[in-house]
Image (cartoon, rainbow over all chains, first blue to last red; front, side, top):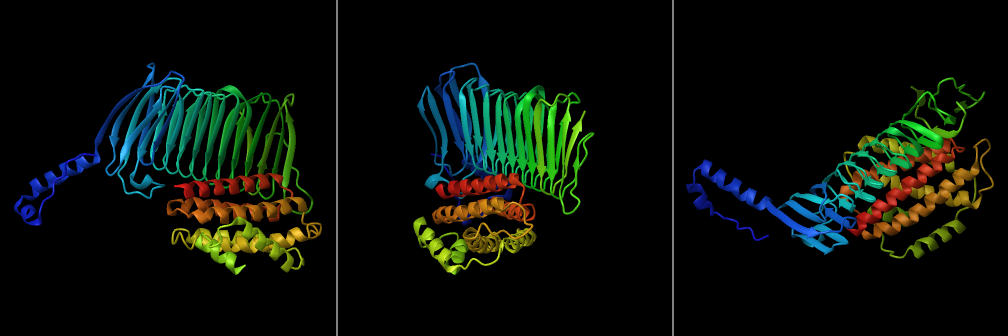
Length: 311
Length: 173
């Protein structure tokens, strides 16, 4: 780190005015916390870059140059910034004393700001660092976080984002999308036409698909609530499941699909559908057809409510 | 079962070999008499445990896991009993295959988790693990009440898989 630090013996400190002392201490803290980063490396336009930072922030933006620029600042106590690899595959990693770990270290937060080639493949790993990626359009984009939040506005062909407790706010134009969290909220927006998959344990799910008809969409949660607003492609399929979370599926009135719904103790609602209940015992279900019945939709919940709306 | 309970509570075991755990299971299988179907009572107990656990979750991350670990260990024994006599479901209890698969899955999960926890646990992950464990208990309780719901098996599989993957990753760091 090579940062000069100043130490004051108590006797000397006592002679300083409180204002001067506080200014000196403040300047000392600033010097320790911020080690500027300024690195540039060549990277092929369709190369790959891996980025790892445990805490702080990872910001990625795109440009039309065949190089990666890394700016920002290293946190207090961080061992070093590692930049290694070649123009096909670059690795940018923040190294911590003793190898770091999941929040076990006491180092300060590191702020990484990267400019990358527009189509470079991205693989980002964070623990508590918030991740903010915007403007990139790679073939593949992967982000893993533990408690850091993820904000993504991009057009990757395939995207895979996972967190443990971090919230995911993804606005993507993509063919295939996979978003998963344990307790974080998953908010998914954009034009998505291929396979869309969202999973949580207790986090809520909120999906809005714009301007495309989905071919394959599945959303499932244990106890989170989930809402999907989308249109279904001919012969498309939607699977929507929860254990106790409430489910709401909003589709256009021109829906053409067979729709099945089932619940053990929750309530079911679907326009025009007759909800069947056994004469004895719990449970309810419905099976109905809208339009030509080309697509297939299944909605299952154990104790949550489930509703299909046509708008 | 005490040995297993202790190892589950502590999050590690002196026995580093998963094979040894399997041998313990085989011994257990011989020791347990296949009697009645204990699944409903145990699943209900697990569900209750998870509710109680929810009330005290902020108090102690260590104590949080003990009830589930104990319940899971009891389930392990019940699972063995169930597996010994899978063709004898309680009357009116729905599809026995789904509960049988849930028990089988839980057994595999327990063994894998015990193995992974030898690498140590990570306190920062306690809330997520608690969330996953409560969810698994909730799903088991749901399977008990609605044994025809195949999608619950998928939910259970995903929850266990996620828990194992996070435990593995935490152990690596």
